[in-house]
Length: 182
Image (cartoon, rainbow, N blue to C red; front, side, top):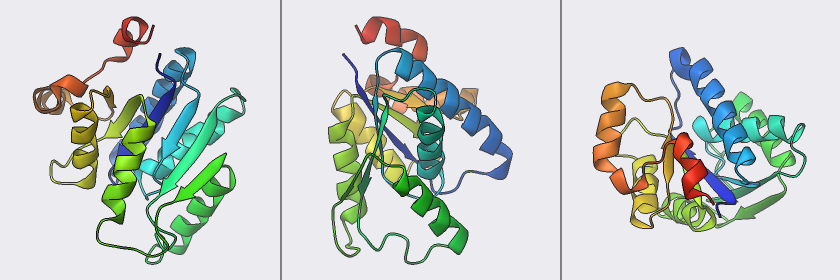
């Protein structure tokens, strides 16, 4: 049975995709909750991670049993962020059910270690993946290697075909959850 979900995605979500990604996140998280997922893991990065965390926080008002967990790469993650991003980060962390921080300071591998921990914690992964050479692509590839299903958001038809060809063993349609989760 699938009970936990992690999120991975790029730090930049284009303004013209923001509304669609927020809607996709809301619909996807609601469907996962309906299928029994109650633990959501986030890495706390800018962009998609914060959007996903805000979605879970908003949905906790309706689904009080769900939990939001953070696995952070290092305590200094926000050192070079804008003030508005730091405020969003503080807000989402203040609503977390638990926060785990892997390193005191930034190291060359702390982001990869965080991504590995996210995958270790998850039964399913929701991603926003547009760039093949990225930490997000590494995380999705790791999920595929571990046979953890991945739900990609924000892809057009061509991108979806490429995703399916690249990460076929990890691809999961929400409609399939009914069969794969029981």
